[in-house]
Length: 81
Image 1 (spheres, rainbow, N blue to C red):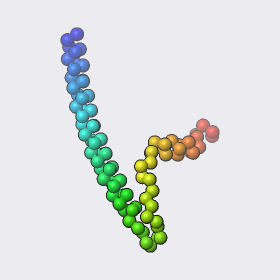
Image 2 (tube, helix red, strand yellow):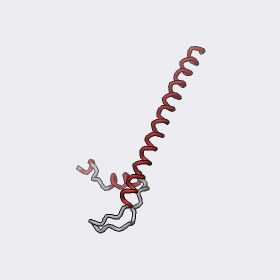
Image 3 (cartoon, rainbow, N blue to C red):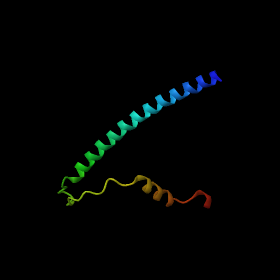
């Protein structure tokens, strides 16, 4: 029983370390994403005189999961063959 507890404890420690590593990675990716989004918004907000574009900035905070769901519904299913 004590051996099983030790094994489970070590697995738990490993999982917690991996969780912390992934949390830090997610935080860095989020920061990078926010910086890229800010850069994109800045570029889009500049007036583009050559194309006669207006100063309106499209909403870049779209829900990507709903977009992905809509795209997958428009694809033909392979079961209809």
